[in-house]
Image (cartoon, one colour):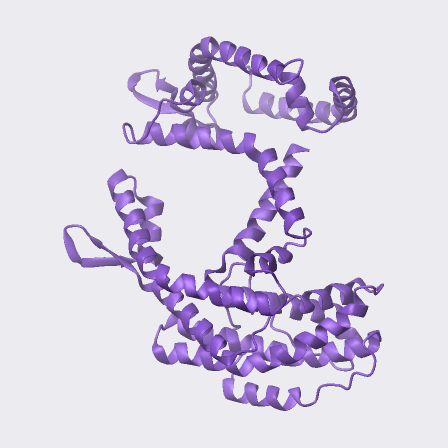
Length: 458
């Protein structure tokens, strides 16, 4: 149950990064359009009279815009084709008719796919060559595409009023997604939003941090500072890179980001949302704002024990790596676990902690005596130190559990699994053990056989 919960949290976190990391809001809108386009192509191509070729690599789920190198995007031509095709929108005489809905989606798909690739093309040009000319091309393209968004949104909403009751789950979801999009009815706002977004991208991509002793040596975030943060071990050097870039970037972004968010909020309100947050939350499909916040609050409570363990481990590692740089008067258990070392039998100056040294050795070492030295040595060293700390630690946790109405700490832990009371939990676990015992015995026999062949006479 806990593992399942952690998987759910990680999935939600990945969506949160993709959805709520809106420093490039336009990218998210394009991703949204790509999801719809791919869904249409996947579910409805065979029902259309003619097949429409789709480039599935237009947008990946990492906010990076890509265009298939085999495609030759002709911005002027494709915009002209779309201008002509927009005039050919099918007549809609019945919004409840699924055949009419599919015919309209076929028309929408052809235009949206072209706009999606053109949009990716002009953004790619800008991100790989940040110039005023390329920025103006983005703004111009946004202005060209805006009327199409204004046209299709009210129509999608009308279709959705009927399709949300359809037995065709694909139609129901696609129109639901289309109807939940937003568009701006003000070209001046489109221009300003596009300009501010480009400014943010420009700042993020070009901000540099200079060497303290040489102001001529300056580095951008990618690839220089990112690589430095991966390989550098010196504390002061890491602090210089991390704080330096955030200070430089933050001071420049602040006056641009606030009006940018104000415009996005204004746009969201004009489309019927209370604010931009409500629009973003809708993407999660986890109920309204109150329900969403309630679910997130509960998830945070559920993962807090795991978070505290991870935090303690990282803190312990940092304290051992950078002594006197952190307040390291925390839990003795985590400290013992992360700092206990095993020394070479013939060289007491060569000593190793569990992570990453002994863990890696246990993965790659083949020599029996070497493995035994690492395994037994660390457990003996750690066990002798932990024993006098662990027992009073558990006594305190038991006391705390009893003060909160539990029989003991075990009862509190068991409750987390949501598998009944202690008796029911133990009964379920006993049955699970019986069920997996045949598999366990086979695995045990296999491993034992491999060990006997690998380490004879041991």
